[in-house]
Image 1 (cartoon, rainbow, N blue to C red):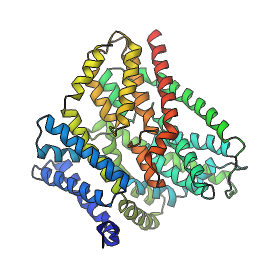
Image 2 (tube, one colour):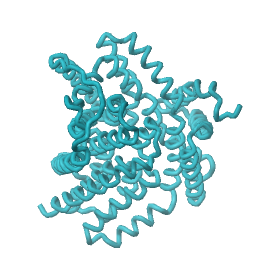
Image 3 (spheres, one colour):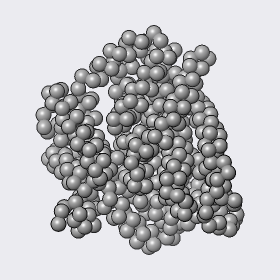
Image 4 (spheres, one colour):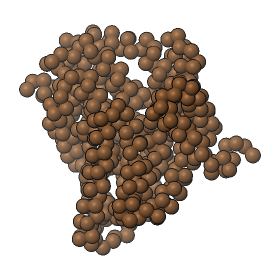
Length: 458
């Protein structure tokens, strides 16, 4: 039987990831030298094995990223060991996605998904009203749960729209969740891009906060009005459930405690460790989920449901593995090549014109995102490139645009975390997400640049 259709291997793929993650975590915390090459080569082997089981699109993506990364690394004088070592750079991302089902299971077995559904549903099943409620709900939970909120709410919206035409359902879910998430996290102190921008520009988070929050509100109001006009007059065929207001309030209070507890843990670990945001969240999800299920007195059903969900999820993570592990090869090669230096030269030509600097920042972030370079990696490059042109007068404006564009493209980048997770769960081409949300990302960038210019004048 062709290996691509070997059901036995597919049913047990979670064992492969479990071994990889366990060895990675042991090396991560112990820094035992002989484990480094072992984890590197194992990660590369998992990349190749996952490539065999991935979809045709991700086979092409993986091949392009690996080939480009190898060429760039070799041009910079790096050897085979370094190239393979770059595979491990995105392991925290892969670990994070592996653990997502556990937090979703807590929400489900705790009955909290019913409360989220009640917050989203409309008595008349009017799509325009459901859209506004979905935007608000994703926005609210995105602040606390970050990417996990997208996973949870997309599952609930999929159930709500299960009787709707597939293309319409996908469009609604993509717009309402990915756009709301991008708007929510631009002012979150937990967002890694916000922290990276604060460090690289030297601008205080509290100086950025009012500008980022104002941008978030303006973008939100604009998008709700644009999309509500699109959905006006449409209804869906969905069952209506009687709303027990007192029960919903109790559930919302329970959820608020859950979210605030999760947020507090992330903040404490972020403040007192050097783990990095994604790694911090990845490490917190499982123990936090177990503890929350125990407190809710739902532990047995949580364990049974969570284990089943985690196994199923990890048996179908091949596309994620190909994307993130091959992207590590590419990003490592890009950073070691002459490309960052060439970019610095381009910025030096326009250092007297702030509007051109801001537009170049947007073009670099958005352009590289279309080729799979994560905005975090791009901003890390820009932090070095922009150093000669950042002044006390323009640092705030540059910081605003770095954050807004770095997170604005998350709704449309075909190989970004959010779009990849969405395309995987919906079984759609990631470029269809780019087509639906690119207009939003460009509008968000335009508003961000406008706010940055106003900040310069004030």
